[in-house]
Length: 144
Ligand code: CMP
Image 1 (cartoon, rainbow, N blue to C red):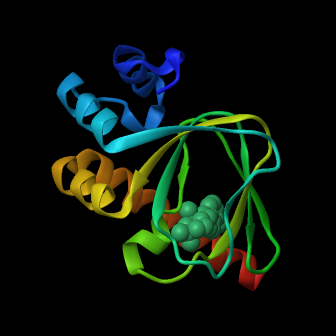
Image 2: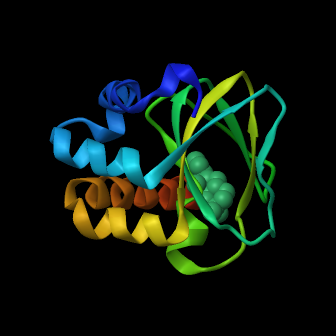
């Protein structure tokens, strides 16, 4: 684990991620245990359309660009997440995701993703809300 991400620092970082707003310290510690930290340079490909998806990513710092199968670009920043679709339905990655800047991410494996959703209903609701919004946006983009 890098020196700047020792356990208390990791929890402090999690406290700043808007996705985790309102969670207790105990819940944050659980997320800290279930996730790995990852730092990537700009240009790093984090998801590739058609690949099997094995991880869920939460952005702590930096920006990513999602390029959907129809070529639409969506920018994601701190507090946002990606990779949930493949983990939820078991289908291949729907889009490419690339780091637009240096990024710090939290990465959650498949089994840990479901553990997290089962133990933290607040998080489950937020992920469902975002999924629903992404679906509506995709529908709008198709009919535009
Ligand atoms: P997944 O399909 O697992 O891998 C690519 C990810 O890109 C996908 O999960 C979502 O997290 C993300 N993604 C796909 N479409 C959109 C969108 N319209 N807006 C934001 N993120 C998206």
